[in-house]
Length: 324
Length: 264
Image (cartoon, rainbow over all chains, first blue to last red; front, side):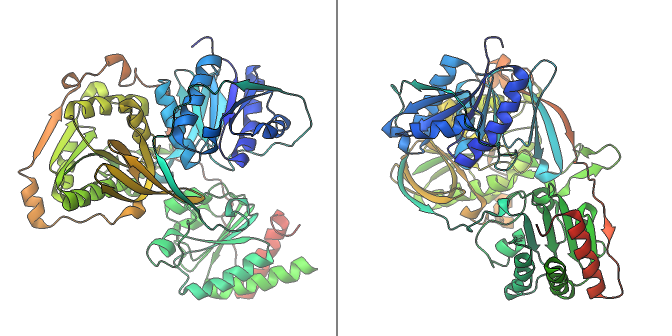
């Protein structure tokens, strides 16, 4: 395990890259080692300063036209040779679907472990990386420790705070892009999925409707409440999957995992799949007719009542109070 | 003709898991197990390919010996033959070790056009075994496929990514992981269940495969589990009471303003 040092951060997603630099900087500080960002692409050198400003001591840059695409093979080969050359002890990879695939293949090529979707990272007394993640459909958190290096983990969006940008100096190291593997999968078309202007993960307030909502049109009372609070509206899995009211991702472990300042669940029973996706909200309000609804077990404010009566008057009460 | 290997995990049925509230430990002993949901989607897709193009569907699983019983369900759905790898020395293998075991089994099975896997398992949800297996076999992979078709040796698939739907083409042999959107797995008929009892289930021990001992089980794993605990719930659980909805709503609104989570 000797001979490995340094903390690395890589993602094709810029937001994730920045957030991971914050956590990476903390880990590098404790290990008294350097934090490096890995930048793969073509004509992307201009992005290096931003990575340095967000905490990177070094930026390893691999510049090659083939890296314009997000295909796995060229990126995998670039990362593998960088790791072989510089031997980092920790690699944080952004947990997008592309990132998870890449990290799994990289870890296999390096005969090492990879922990996906880590929400907590720390170091034990032997300076080994200790990870926490949710398993069993949200029923449990597993704590794991690495036995070998490099230690590769995937980090989801919004798991860690984005660090402040500050002007500072850093080193940009241009690495050879020779011997990059060519993509083995041909990309025919990329159709962007329409997403809300503000991502629901970033909303400060999220009002979520569940099976207690009788008709899709009734979401307008939830929208009024969320607009009053400058928030966003979400829905649970049955409304998308069974009733087919919506086509995007629901709020829950298998969809959007959110941690807003305020979550208001309306007509939601609170199956574990949903609760696991909202558990880290700062304040949880639950409104449900059924006094036995499991969601009340994880709520700060419990309203046993008909959402059709409560939600509209809650909107007007908040409007009145926020105006004064 | 198409030869498809489907990797199937006999997973803990997470919807039936119970927690010991005093210790926050999960009661996993004797917890009901089933074919992991997304693996059923993979199996269904493989069977549809076979129905269209002819060929063979083989299932491959690593787990306790009673996985043989679970595999009967896969055979009833339409798989032709099941391979079960079961050996105490392989227990507690992480994804690194598991991919080594599966890769050796695939090599022993021989020629194939496609390997299908679920995008992740319902219990550990790591989404790693698929890509790791592809890496071991040095074949390309298409992850998160929500639609696929095969013409000759060219596979076309739609990948469901966070911000985009990507259409890709690739040549067989390759590995594909599928999402739950891809299909609705069939429920086998009584007739199919009866027929499945005559199909072959092959049981392999570690010694039947070219497995490197130091690469499997707990010793061959890169990651060690320290603890599995139900999350702590520390919520206020304040029940809002009042004469009527308006009174309840006003109390709640004031509480939220005091919490500092609404307004500026």
